[in-house]
Image (cartoon, rainbow, N blue to C red; front, side):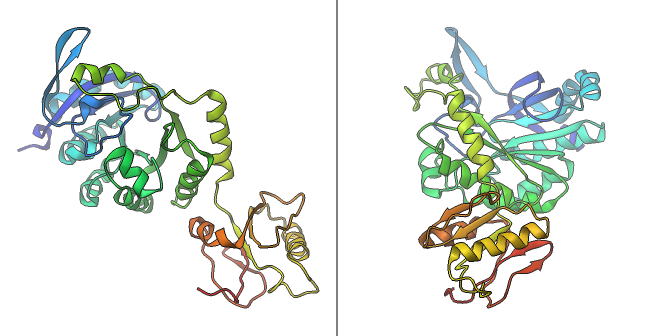
Length: 353
């Protein structure tokens, strides 16, 4: 059987989209999802089975079976728009990785015809399923919703360990552009600390240098009534533009740190008697070398260095948490500052592992 005869189940096709990958795109929405996000704007996508949904008082059948051949013929109708804009096809859902074979073969058909390919996905699938799609995939638009497993499970029905691991693997694959997107959901992940935690994780992934924040909306609320289901986000308002800007600023501040300084007065023995003096000496060294280095200082002495690029101060009690989130590795050794692979790193030997 030809791969063009592979069958899948979709529930919608959206043409002329400009928000789900580069250029003008055709989005194919696939049925089926393993998550049950409280805010989901496509609840009709969650179950794989074909359903009936009330739309404007009329019954509408949600879901139909198609072949790759049928779908690629539909997608090719807008080839001229893809060519002029750099657009193509995006698979969405639901979770398109729930139909990995169909996704793989539809993306393959697009690639063989010179059409750009993308998926919107939470990566909530075994790696083997994702891996088979990657050779035919240009852009992976991946949702990262939260870094805390328990809170993620509370709001989506699943913990996030598999998704985070798959994000690392896609980034390491290196041939597919990975874009991290965050739906900003009030009461779930709309705090500065939560967005910064996601930003630090995203920055630790090779090739990912920023995240896209997508504000919560209620455009799918009526669908729940049509499906006879309660809307669990009733009364929750979308974030304001001012709040989204604040989170965007927090995202930028949550970027990885190139330099980690701990117990500065101990290894910095050249006449420094305090963390502040040691910090000033180190910053002077950095400036002399022309390094615009972001710095995280872990100090119980609450020191302050005015005019230092990107300095953030944390108490010693919290330093280990932030070290684990930094993109640069560090070691403990009784050494003076050294240059490692172009990164200025600072080491201290009197902390216990």
